[in-house]
Image (tube, rainbow, N blue to C red):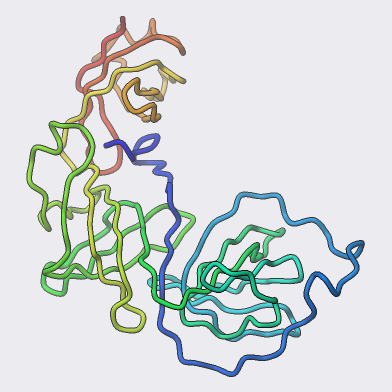
Length: 286
């Protein structure tokens, strides 16, 4: 439970997926000059937005347009721009930008430059790395082992395959952890954190699946109200145990005392996860 953020409706990803695809080798074109050969006055500042890390195979490198395609496993290929500001590393050692070519395994730190995706840094890996993906189960097919996970409306769902070697566990509050986990926990709406490796080209195989919540499970919270909206029957609570924020729905008709609650008040809440959010079954203020 310690990794859940602000309810299931607005689940935030703590870690962006680092995923790997096996690509066909390609010739490595010569790139433009590095930072050292460029006039510092001509180099604009890096975009200052939030960065996100993606992993996959670098293909279709175009040194004229300063762009390449990153094939991200389980998602659509991404067109990414780069220039002299982009830092490139191979197994942790910095290399020249001109040495970048088609790569089977790369981790790319990106940010938005306007409406375009820009590479802040590129980390080339000699060996395939594991990936991690946190989200809500969309579907699971026990026959094929195909598991579809969705992180948010802004990102593509990820498809991974559950094998006989996939390790399951529940995490969070002791009451939830007391039940043995397994493929039966992969019900639609369940919250999971998956680590995976590359199997066949374009196919991710789950190594471990940590289950954070399943529909129908009950949780107890105790903490201060960050915000509350009586009309919509929603409050955001900062839990005193794990210091995370949780969005909880409640019925003002069932809990009329909620009308006297304000931000900063301490409350105790028992809530059931219904596959899309937490719904209060007990709400009491101190």
